[in-house]
Amino acid sequence: MKELTAIQTISDLLTDSDGQLAGQLQQVVTYLSQSLQFTEAAVASLSIDETEFTSPEYEPPVHQLSVQDVTTAGNELTLIIGYTIDSVSETDGDVFLPEERELITTVLQLVTAYLDRRHVLSDLQEAERRLNLILDNTTAVMYLKDTEGRYVFVNAEYERLFNVDSEELIGQYDADIHPPDMAETVQANDRRVLETGEPIETEEQITVDGDERTYLSLKVPVLDAAGEVEGVFGVSTEITERKERERQLEALNREIPRLLSAETIEEVAELGVVAAHEILDLQANAIHLYDAENEELAPVAYTDGVLELIGDPPTFRDGQSIAWRVFADGNATAIDDIQTDTDIYNPESPIRSELYLPLGEYGILMAGSPTPSKFDSQDVTVGELLTAHLTTALSQVTTEQELREREAELEAQNERLEQFASMVSHDLRNPLSVASGNLELYRETGEESRLETIDTALTRIQELITDLTSLARYGIPDENHELVSVSEVARDAWELIDTRSATLSTEPCTVTGDASQITTLFENLFRNAVGHGGPDVTVRVGPLENGFYVEDTGDGIPPDERDTVFDHGYTTGYSGSGIGLTIVSRIAQAHSWDVTLTDSTEGGARFEFRATCSDDPDN
Image (tube, rainbow, N blue to C red; front, side):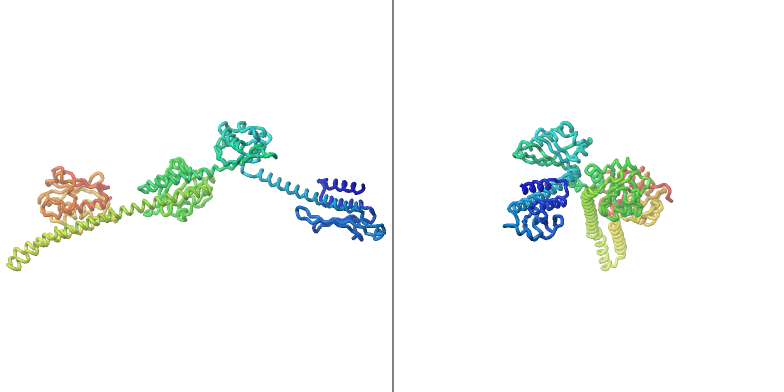
């Protein structure tokens, strides 16, 4: 009876979960020693791994009984009872009663069970703490609904997102808190889980504060003890930004063929700012391309948002702006507040944050906003993808343009070579044959009249060589242009040719060009006028509104021949080489002048050259 009372008392001590573990175990060994038959000499000890609890005034017992056990957590337990005086051994039989042996075994079992319970409880409390930590701090929305669709539980993120209190939400339906179409979609997904008993993962469009967001929802069935579905548990993670990036990447991929089909740098730039606006949502953006000749970043294309924000975009030069610094560095950059940057171009600008995306050697794409910290690392990353495509397109256009220019140059060179071959094989052959034949006759007969014919032929050869050289020279533009007085150059050219008794009249006019080439132009025009118009022809040179003219009083050129007069080999048979007007055309092309052939007031030929002119020869 005494042992049963002890077991009950110790069980009650260990059931009191409010007590501290050490205090409770100390009470167990104290009460246990008092429950033995020889109380005055009884002692007890409990060892848990390296920790020992002993009864009051504990001394090592002379007679002892011990039992051992191990908890589920792996703790080793040893419980000992005993007597400290040897007189106990005078009793008949065993020192320890059978009841005492059963008592010590039962007590150790109670202690082991108690420690196991505390360990499980501790694990559960820790698990609950961690779960609550997750539920309260996760950015995912978590919720539990019953089979009717009523909310049973929502986490803190759900409360924050929809500005509702958990206690107010419990028992309500989606239709009570969400728009009808959204509630119906969510409920339809819940019903799929309830009906199939299988989890699903689906995208759901959720409206929050008037903004539509995309969530990836994982919904699983909740089962009761019998395995029956009793609700739906869901975890929804916002993927709005990820979906937007996917949309942007898909749109960029669709834009690549358009960029690569562009034929000019300007077209690439226009497509680029539109793509940055429509795909990346860069409302105010501009592309500045590098002008190597002027060493500047000049605006080529920009959105209306730029005009609304700052007006016409500026041109940047070395050391004057953040844009130039980033262009030189070549690293894409987002600046949260340009007002704090020492390289700011205009401190009075309403722009606060900017995104800079270099285009390699070609320039830079810029975007601005009056809002600080508008652009982040994701804008930089996606922006770099766009600029990579733009750089490729710019490179392709530049390469193709260089190839076209090279092909045109080669075609022009081939044309000149063909003209050279024509003159060498035909035009030069005739006077050379005349000279050779008459030289042979002179040797045979000594007739001096042959020498005059030879001299004439050699003079003709010299003229053809001069024309040939001019044709080769003036097919290539000369970039060393300067202001040239047309009247002065015309008079100089007039003195260089045999004008017979012809007359020259000039009026003041200036153009920008190469004086030597323009002199050659006049030589050929004057030679053509005197050759066709006769020895008494009058030649006039004067200004046009945006150019100058050269006209004569000769017979003119028939309208049906005017389209061919500039072709190589054209001649009317006055002993010209047939390339004089071809040279004129070449020089005009080298100066980017348009040439028009019409009638003068007297019916002669009038050549009009459209270029920038001034009536003041000193300009």
